[in-house]
Image 1 (cartoon, one colour):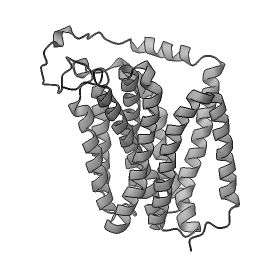
Image 2 (cartoon, helix red, strand yellow):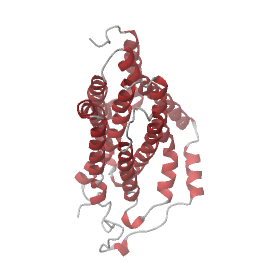
Image 3 (cartoon, helix red, strand yellow):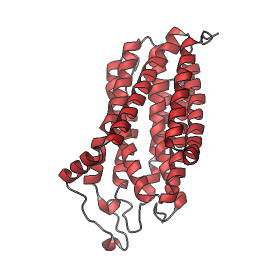
Image 4 (cartoon, helix red, strand yellow):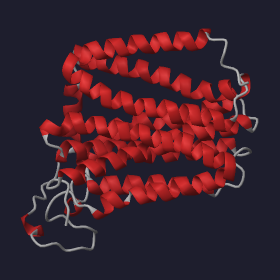
Length: 328
């Protein structure tokens, strides 16, 4: 049976599928769902609240990392149980949103359900990254990481443009059904592919050679917290946190404002906004992720980060100054 450590194709496909599964909910919530509630009469305050509760769980990633390192079910693999738990939670929470009768009238309920949904998505992200660190060879990490992020943007395109088109033609319930089917389908990758030889496929399975597998416990919680504190000391980690926070502020503002601005102020339809933002915009992200990994290897992180930041500023200024954005 295939295992991630033995098959380069298996680990590449599995990690890319998991990153695609992260992009689908993000594209669906921040593009399709926000545009939908905006066209149904919700104002900027409502879309901003949904955005805040959608992004807040991503600040829990430090907590998820500690839990994943400290606890687990080693017979099924070091990271795979957490990946499975998170992915199944993503699908189940999307199914719960499908059961709400009228999302346009239950914005408060929707916002908190989006929060729970993204708790599982952020947990899946951390578990998938931990798995990637464990199973990828050092010489393939850069290339596969670029492919993973490209898959994430592809998932955003599916959740944005794809689900937005389904919503426009068949209704919001049909879009939820499609999302649930896709998310549970992606769960088959970590469900049917083991991390290492000797791992159990299911909790009740018994594999040959299980007794030879290392089942040592991880570091204690206190030791993990000390290691994290040591890693965050110094100028470089502080600058990294500052840059990451600044980028997150920009993304959060755009995600909250754009659906309302384009649909209510500029007159775009929900379908048009979903196709442009979640389609062309997400596919541009696929290209950027693949090209970014290549350029960083050639020109260095600092140069690419500086030029990319400058181009983002120029594009935002162009968007603010343009007078040709209104729907015709």
